[in-house]
Structure formats: C-alpha cells, structure tokens
Amino acid sequence: MSEGTAPAAGEAASVADEAARERLLYLRGSIDNLDAALVHLLAERFKCTQQVGELKARHSLPPADPAREAAQIERLRRLAEDAKLDPAFAEKFLNFIIGEVVRHHKAIAHQASTSNDERREETPAPTE
Image (cartoon, rainbow, N blue to C red):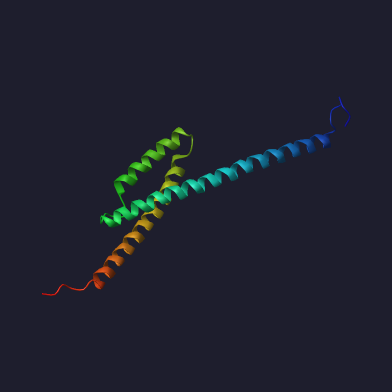
C-alpha cells in the first residue's frame, strides 16, 4: 500500500485483525492483573477471617453469625448495584466466601477443642 492510497479490502481486514489482536492482548493483560489482585485481596481477607476464627474458638463463640452474614450480603448487594454489577452475582460470590469462612471457623473450633481435651488429659488430677 503506498502512502495516500486506501488499503485494499484484504489489507484493511488484516490491519483491523491486527488492531483487534493487540486490543485483545491488552485487555487480557488487564484481566490477568485484576485476577492477581483478586487473589491477593482474598488471601488478605482470609488472613483476617482466620484470626476471627481463632478469637471465636478461644471465647467459645459460634463459627457462624447469621445476622452479620445477612447484613454483609445486603451491604454487598447495594455496593454491587452502585457499581453496576449484578447484585445476584455479588450475593452468590459472598455466600461462597462466607461458606468457606464458616468451614474454616468450624475446623479451627474443632482443633481448639481437641487441643483443650488433650491438655486436660495430660494434666494430672490434684491429690488430696
């Protein structure tokens, strides 16, 4: 194609295809970055919920808090609406996370009670 002339039909398609491929690569790079950020955010969230589970176990609190969970789901649905994200999707996502957190909290509570039972067995009974 010489300067100042329009590209032939095949060349135009090729240029458009190349531009589309470049845009696709750019967008996929952004998606990869966002996925990495999500993984890191979830890791930080689970570090916090791990500490919550340990605190609950130490104080014999239940692993689940249905009132807090319902409030969080409603809050997340409002945030999703404001962000133009499907609130039903946001709720499903949070329910999945909550399910994992509660499962972890139950495991922590079980481990804590097992450790307490073992410590009681190791402690000699007082003698008179």
